[in-house]
Image 1 (cartoon, one colour):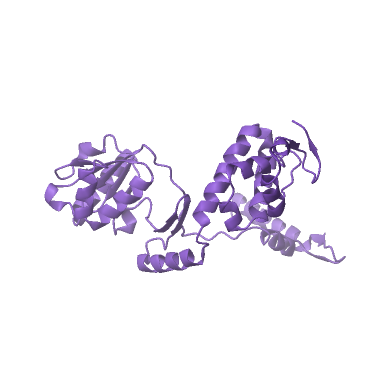
Image 2: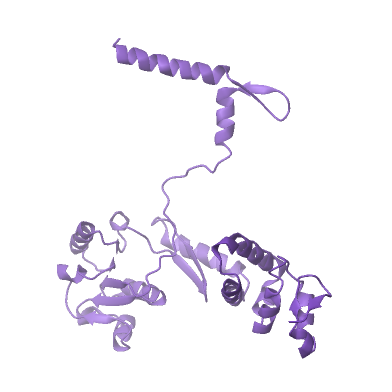
Length: 297
């Protein structure tokens, strides 16, 4: 046995001995071995489950997206990117445009290049989406994108995708995506539909109202040091009111609600509605966060 192997073997043996002989106290008074303690510690944290995707809300506003193809799949990709406010160029012979893509072209929602793909098309692309019935040509485009480090998706070819398109439910600012990581697109659609049916009908409107309240809150408490308090208070607001009540918040309600921020309190919906009915002279008062007491502004 070489000297190095002897040292390494000795070190490993020593480590195992330490783990087995070390004893840790428990809240119940008894002790257990070190390796058991190490296992218990590891169980406190989320288990790593590889093989998934990093789910993101990718911001592509004003980014240049190149779509190669003009069929049904391309039409869906184009709509997704338009909804994200991207700038889109469609490279496809005119004869290959389906009715929806042709409509986008005629409405000047996308830029159309009437020919097949050329490598120079990648010069200004921030993202590339390929949806053509030519596997060899698709692979060539994929490799060119890799050379230029441009994120790309080759439709229906999971190994040649930097990202997948999932099944999406949209309700105003609310977006929910279900992904099967390329394994079962139809199942993703079924699951997405099931989730959407369980949501409140006015979820999007409620989220819009909460977003407006957050914007107003940032104006009165903009300091970075206020961030934990802002987050905590918004959580209280979200938990305090039903979806319908959040939807019905008026600008006046939001201004009244913000008067409670300094004291880190949230009024009941009844108290908030009562403030609507206060005489104009009282509505101008500054609420200190305690019910029934105000200080004239």
